[in-house]
Image (tube, each protein chain N blue to C red):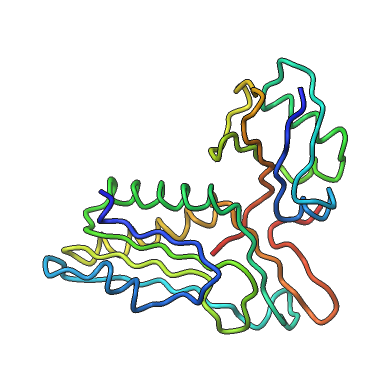
Length: 141
Length: 79
């Protein structure tokens, strides 16, 4: 199982090629790549910066759980889930998910499952900074 | 017992720290700890936060022991 999963939470710049190369295999007919990008607007306001903070030890465990589940539920060969932490600028990449599979349907479905589950369960928090302040996304007490 | 709580996200603003020590009655389970925190910090109540014990999401009926790693997990927003 271990050589089928690549999970990373890092303050280094994420690398699409690294994820692609990890999942690539001669037995696979397709690879899906989801690449999250920092957009320039939120709540009709111009975003200046995003900060991602993590509970790193648990985030790595949860990402690994998602990968294990994806391998169990879909006919895929390998999966990479890499997430950034720290400050990101507009256009930077907070998350990459790569999935390889013999057939495309499973690759698409597993990729969607992984990003949807990540957004629900992995302990990572996004703070959006604007010119006039900042807010924690999903948390409005 | 005294437990060390790790806090993240918006909770770092509410608590003004990344971790806080709490004197808790024993025995206490996860649901009771949530209620304790919501009472002490009313701003947390609307957030529907989770608790992780030893880096795993914990159910409300799990009893908390000394020396476990307890974390308050406000709504997540990765991706």
